[in-house]
Image (cartoon, rainbow, N blue to C red; front, side):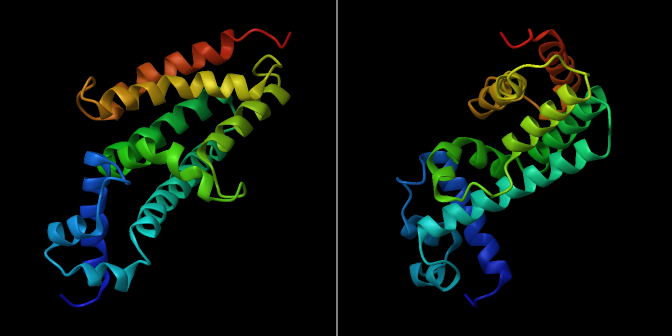
Length: 193
């Protein structure tokens, strides 16, 4: 099979399926090659190896997600509208490519350590949105990291449930519930003690 963007895309999709199904460590380049019907050497024409492939897929999604939710938040000046826009963007990304989104969620603990702290990060974006809302007086002052963690927990746990078959359908079907729950968490959070 010739080297080209189509081959690289096929390698990436096969790797994603295997990484999600059995884990990065358990996946062999031979399995990826077999899934695409190419020689194992063809993978090495596009990537240094399985680890680089896993990291590149993760990084691309991580940065895209951070940029999408940052743009969504930036389009609004009120925390209520920002939360709604962030949830919409987050759910849209999940629904657009659930396999890639699931891979990102399932592998973040293993892969985040390979990237510098200046890599655009969805968590950092949410923390900054919460801090700005506190400065504007829309949210009570407090620990922005804790507030962001509680807000993120609403959607992250739902993603975990969906990843393991406990939640059906597109994530966007639940965006109004996510938004209401996040706003309730943010507005009811006690002041810093």
